[in-house]
Length: 164
Image (cartoon, rainbow, N blue to C red; front, top):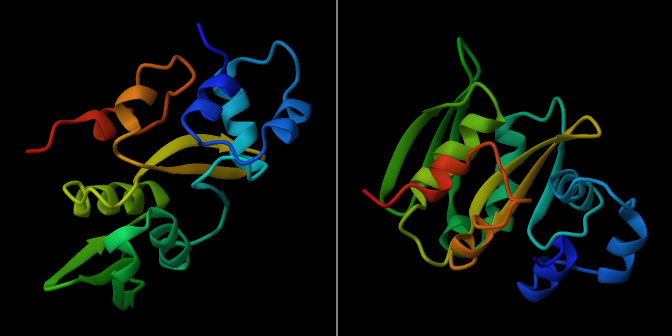
């Protein structure tokens, strides 16, 4: 079986293999190492989001990391009560999203761009060092990653769900 770094290097998902090798402790479980790599900024498309960041504050950096058509998404309005509500516009489509947390934002963005081949999917890797680790991955790479034991995002079922 290939090592975590071998797989990430082969898939061109690692920014600096030497830095990654120095960072990872020997014997650490690979899924934990993936969190550590994301937090260190060594995963291509990885984002480490501090606690307290609101969904509307994350929208710009996240859609930029998603790429493609997601870069044109506009937040038209933000309402704060009773639950944070974003009014977004993607092309001719306008939607209202209630987003109580960052996971809800990830879900809505993945759902909106499910059929867009040029937009990366967002994997919610988990929490590390008081931050949420997110990874924007090319959809063509996802089928190979889901077969890897180290890839266990919180939203795995949504990422692998067939298009309706």
